[in-house]
Structure formats: structure tokens, C-alpha cells
Length: 177
Image 1 (cartoon, rainbow, N blue to C red):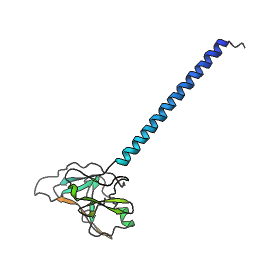
Image 2: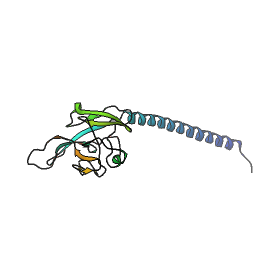
Image 3: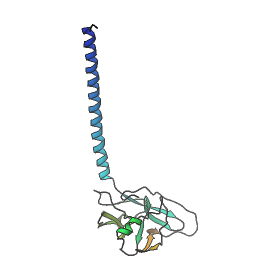
Image 4: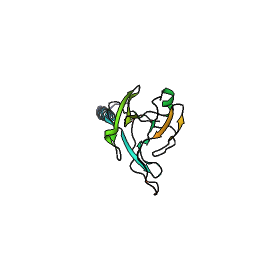
């Protein structure tokens, strides 16, 4: 079989073009990946946690951060307790919670715990209940267990009459379920 030098040159140029294109595509992809990763890390590190309020005719206005927030009448929530009542923790790098609609920002604070900074309201540590499956669910209110009595954090008593109404309750961060 006879090889035509013109064919060899065009084949070689095609491979060089393909190789250059692949290299360029890889470089652009890697650059975008690095930029995307840096952006994701930055936004994750600065992503805060919002405590908002929701309202029902039965309970009035109470605190939520994705799910209903509770306090304990004692400060005895140990490791076993935290399996059922996860602490509302700030994301790493965040030092304060944001007060959402219906929340008094002056009453928000933190306390240092083994897992990081736990959010407090009026000096009381805040917790979620694992059996609350969604915003505004209140299955742990007035629940008495080994660790004490749990209560929803009510910021305004209900007015008599009227039906159920709900205000903004954006998802928070912190500990997940």
C-alpha cells in the first residue's frame, strides 16, 4: 500500500487540531470547576441561619428555623437527648443567627456547646424535634421525657377566634435530620 505524503500531513494536522481542542476544553472545564468550587466554599462559609416566626390560632406566634423550635425547662440535654432533640447550631464560620419576620433580634444569642455555637432565644438554648416533619409541625410541645418538659418558643399568644394562619418560615441551616 502506498502512502501519500499529502494524506499523512492532513491526518497529522487533524490530530493536532483535535488534541488542541481537547486540551483547551479541559483547561476551560478545570478553570470553571475551580471557580465553581471556590464560589461554593465561599457561599457555604458565609451562609447564615435565620430564625423566623410562624403563627397558628392555637399556639399564637412561635419560632421556627425550617422546623419548629423548642426549649427545655432544664439544661440537661445530653448526647442521648440530642438524638431526639438536635441543637440549633450555627454553620461553621457564622457567629450570629439572623432574625427573620416576627423575631426580636435582641433576644437572639448563642452559647458554646461541644458541636459549635448553639442558638438561644431570651437566653434559652433552641432545639428541633426529630418527629416534626416539616415547617410548622408541633409534635413535641409540652412533651415530658427523661430530660424534662419541652415547649414551643411562643413570642405572641394567640388571639381568640380565627383560623390557622401562617407567616413566612424560611428554611434554616445548621443541624440536619
